[in-house]
Length: 551
Image 1 (cartoon, helix red, strand yellow):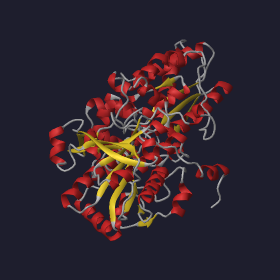
Image 2: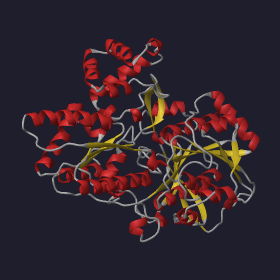
Image 3: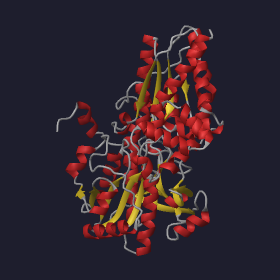
Image 4: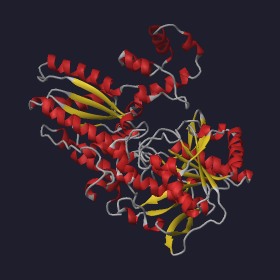
């Protein structure tokens, strides 16, 4: 396979690690833990893994060694995130340092590989090809959920066949919830298989008092911020387009907020703020229009607007409409059998409440149709298919036409729409993510060697130099609460939304008026840098720096 010069150079990059992981490691158990909410329910569901202590790792003079070799399986679960290959590299190197005869097996295509017995031994030659690279292509990923007893039992049989002592699941909140369920089941069955999770998601919503950030968020945001900066440079040069840019992040606006902190656009919408203020679509449009008119009055008919992918579900009236649609369309054969978009549209209108029907009628037909497309496995609308940026452009355009007719707007409005998603999920990891992920992988091996299960690999103190990072493990049950999924209450890891009283949002709030003004305040971050001064190459996200300031 032909490689670029950067690929070749990156393969030789040696990730930086905490001092505690650079030699012998000793595990220290701390206080027992409890779940973030719904303690009694979670304890009842997870009697074997609830209340386990926090673990920290300290350096020791004694070299770690396992006399008896053991095998480990690894799964990449869910959407891609930069750095996944380095978690696997750290896992492999950690295993080999404990005993050269230890083996690492990769389950192919995600969790289904464990169920179906599709796997590959990951040897040194394979691992070396993927060090410090983006993507999940070393073994592939998938979204199969590990929820059924027969799946767990199939996994036991496959692990016994391969002599696997532990399974490492690299995934987001849902995947790590599944890891916790799997760990509990294997303890109940006393089958001797451990389960360790690793925190992955570019959305940034897998974080809490222990997990400072999920891996991939840093690289993805820097990739998107570069593209936004490029667009802003073009906008400031051509001076004739408003760019409406939708960014990944269904459940939380962390990506949009971080990209705004890095690039300083004219407008950045935050879903959590929209919900808190009970804003309508028209309210959002009016806020955008005010900025456009103000800049036009200064002769500036251009700008940038960042839009979180999940915005539409945070608008209270839209959420009610979407919930009604979800309930109505669940296994609705009558709707599916209807012929043509117009027939389906009339059918939907006849079933909605008066308020939702009025809102549905007001939407452009293209957006209304997108709201009625196939649901995801949870029975929810697939927001990534809803082109919110186009909806806003159309509504802004109509409002500006009214203002122009009334003599209240004399500018020219031309808009371009963008969606940045897949561009960032498999980018070559930043130094931060390369280092962080490698440390997460090595940490996982020490948790396995110590016989731990139901833990998430933990690396903290991330705004300090890598040598000062702290490694350990956090019980997954500590992050869980009960939420309604498909009509039933289920234990899940609590998602972290943007905190409106948190430092990152407050910074946006304090500066947004200046960024929206006729003065140009754009920042052009440029591409990710891998070699050079630490302040250019190794810095974490602005979000993390603001959150950890003074801690």
